[in-house]
Length: 403
Image (cartoon, rainbow, N blue to C red; front, side, top):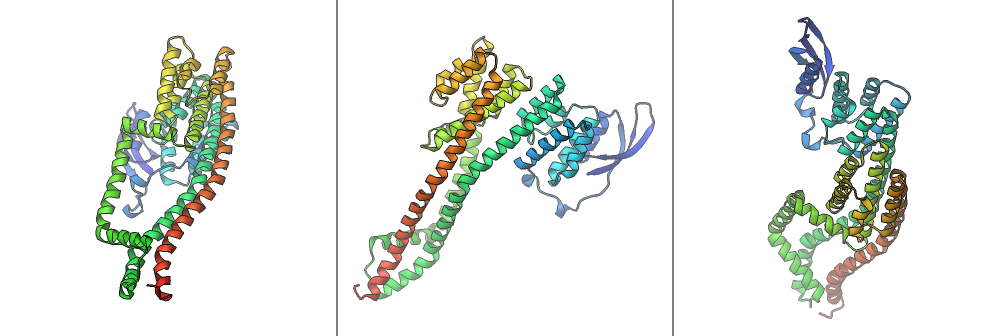
């Protein structure tokens, strides 16, 4: 949003102008950071209440963050001043919520703040990992190089997540559609069929009796089923927000047949890539381990990385701590990290390790996609066969006169 302001400087002079910020409070903060005492502040244009987006729907997509880091990296590399770069990127943002955030970040930088400090005010959008890498780039004078690291990292992470989601979206859609159609048939079609079968006194096979019983139950207790399902979803959501709930769920994910191996590779790739990027960005090993543990995305791995950090703090090595959990960390990965520590090339070894497991993930996802298709066909075939047997067999007995 754009605000017209009138403020007093330290010298007592009246200054008027316009400023862009996400809201009135943010505008006041920006002006105060510029050592101005606000006299008046008015919104340049008010958006009608019906056009405002609700906070629960305000979010920044991963793809938008990827574009932000890439565009900013290109502009900074081309020797464009940081303020001009932020202004250019904010103009290109299509998401109004994200645009307001970038405008506020630019205003804070104009007020004298470092880019990392300005981004830190929006931790829900910019992760601690990215903020710290940018901070290290500012300290070492390698902001352009660091932004390129982040742009590449964000793109690779986005593509990896997109590939995994794409592999599972098709079977989830098919099964959900089949479940919905099956439920509609049970609730609306089966009762009509039941009336016909009772009128003709047809002999009902076991499959038909099961279907009729399920239909009667759903029609009578659909409200109870809805309450139980909604309650279970809400309860699961709150349970996952607790430490024990999240840790238990993360542990379960690592032990799911077939998928468990995929999850381990994903978290190991994320850990290796994040730690490598942080070390290349110039962060101390202890800080890099702390941040890597926070953003790895799995409590089991986070605790393992925290243990490695304690070891390093006492003069030990990362590899010796990782050896305690050979189930989740392959021996080959531990050996590579050990070599990296001994040769003082941990960052480059971790990068190679991340690339190796990223290729492994690609192969695993491709294999899973090929495996899911026949399993999906089998499940759908069994479901259709059950419905056909339950519906057509009694009708056939009526038409053939065998009832």
